[in-house]
Image (cartoon, rainbow, N blue to C red):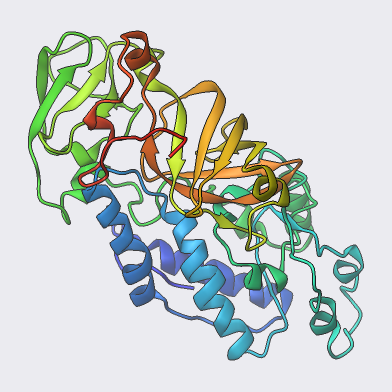
Length: 382
């Protein structure tokens, strides 16, 4: 599957390398190889959204959006519609409630006609479950996948550890795959400088770095949208580190705090957009009580945070963390978990006041926490 059409800085096309690796795996395993391109779809549904979110001062997650629109929609439809597949299998470390070990044990047995078709004709919603290898669990990236796709998806690595998977690969002559480094970061950026990459598509909007404590102007930047809350702000001429605490889309100012643990970086309240529930509807307890305890995370592999969800009439939720968390940012996805099950996710569109704002006795967060047109955070009761 090819989703991006550009070269890395060094002139090496990662898509071509991925394609070659996949082809060699198919040769070793003696299975057909198919190549499809979703460059246009990726640009329209993922990259354009990525740029739009950054222009609003948000911090998008293109991997979650890609899984929703490309891998588990475009590719999924192609596999079932064009290849006549009963289901798709991916290398994600995740599980579903439809897991059946017997299916994976039939390696050398010709499967009877309709095996998968009958298996997936269920009435209950399919649950998305965390992988056995908690360090490799990827349910975070699958939190926007549709119920329709999950019903016909297999995650054969879900019950295995990464070490055991590598052992299987080695035993089957797939040494070339074992030698590859794990992919990290935004796939289409590669090893390029992120700021330079973004400024190829968005116009610079110069602004100031301002101390959140005393209002001192500390330096200048090329665009407030280049920064996400919590990251280190590299300000020329300053030795000590400063960290992005708030952003003001109206003035272009980026407010910074002098310590990585500064209270201006911590919040315990957020509001999402309409939540995508894996089961296609909110949990019964949340519908009944309008509130529910669970856990959430907004970055892959971060520790799960205990929280309370408050359901709003429009399908959005307020999330109140039991303890303030660092570097919540607009545009990220709050992904919800309960008892090993990934319930779904919602995009963060509002932030409550920081611990620093509350300490100073201000009930509302500064406008800098919002993107243009987002407006101020409102009370959870509304």
